[in-house]
Image (cartoon, one colour):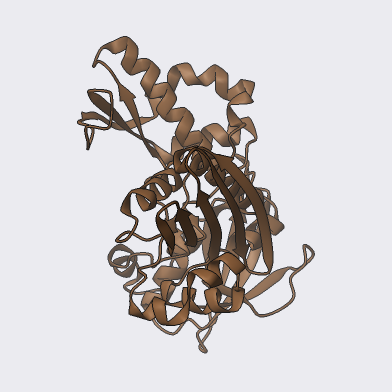
Amino acid sequence: MRATGLIGLNLFLLLMTLPALAMKVDSLYKSTVPVTTQGATERSHAVQEALSQVLIKVSGSTQILSSSNLKARLGTADTLIQQMGYITPPSNKNRVPYLLEVQFDPMGIHQWLRDAGIAEWDQNRPLIIAWIAYEAPGHPSEIVNNDLTPEIATLFKQNAEQYGLPLILPLMDMTDFHQISTTDVIDGTLANLTNAAKRYASDAMLIGQVTQASHSLVSRWKLVLGDQQWEWNLAGQSIADIAPPLMTHIMTTLATRFAIITTNTIQKDLLLKVTGITHYPDFAQLTRYLTHLPPVANVEIIKISPDNDVILKVSLRSNQESFIQALSVGQRLIKTSPTTSSNTMVVYQWNP
């Protein structure tokens, strides 16, 4: 990226951190696998399992390992390792003596997916607030949260993390109690739930009703993202039975919308005009934001006008539609003019 003529820009780029864009999933390239020994053979298999989990999270697809290209490369999983170590399981509920924690190289992961022609889903993902009404024999219906239902809350959060989903639960403090009730969750009263969700700065809502009987559990779910909604009904014997398929449904649904197929070569150069850049920190955040988007290969400054408009040339590893879709996550850039694939320049306003 060229930044000729911008005095002090490099310093700002070093000092500024990227603010939240929806939610950045920091654990996307890390996985933990239970092992019984620290031997080389089991470690090799565990590393391949850890890489498989990471590939699923980054692609948003549980079917990714059917790719012959990736299957053939799993044997070289160790070439992508950045860090690796054994840790002790956090509780006695784990029936294995060790957990192998592996951190993989993000650039290497994305290169593998590009080579296989598989879509990539960025670290910046829609933040989901989960409104879950839980009822069991002798347990009146209440909204799941960390204080009143900690074990259930932990199960949902752990499964969400495993599938690369930034999911949070409400505090259910006095502010929440004054705005919503279990009836709102059970009835799916979107107006009340949407209003209560504003304090959490979420991008999407997961609304669920879970009813536990003595030996069975039934649940119904609705995912709301903007004006789109998806619904599922899941049953099992416990929360542990329904949490994994629920998170799989959510992951694949969102990945279908946000994951992007990129290539190793530049597919298009696009002029991007951004208004509302008033300070150097804004410019630093803008450039960092753009360069972290999967479709973007390079960002070049073309012009900075006296009225603080910035014109950039953005080189894309994908098509223009994929780039526009990537910009919709987190709404850091707001479209100010209609956009078509024939546009020579797209215009957005910076939303700090």
